[in-house]
Image (tube, rainbow, N blue to C red; front, side, top):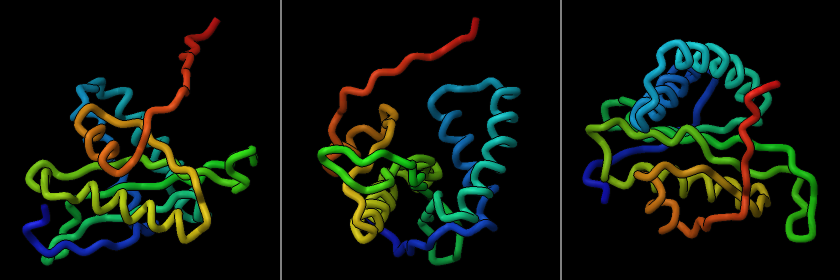
Length: 159
């Protein structure tokens, strides 16, 4: 539960480096340590974010302490999606870059940010939101109603 007063604010183009840093630490927390790959991800990711923040296809939110420090963040990528029998919206929401600074974990910040994203999606008329959960995040998402799907994946190594 929240034991401090945190505010939520939306991300801007000025926050690209904060989002990139959160994303990197998220992967490091999951055990990914290849610094060359991380550097490349950071560089490409920063440009990817700039474009999508500018055109509105990436929305982000931060939890802010009373002193103004960013201590948690989460993002939403609006993916083009073809209409189907169950959802005629042109976009699907994909939640990503959910990260909380270690000293602020277990206070409900990730939950608060995901609920903020879900509310934003509902106000936009979106009916489908998905994400990939880490082992630490899975209980939070399940408690918010997220369900496993039948998605399959193939990693193509090359020829």
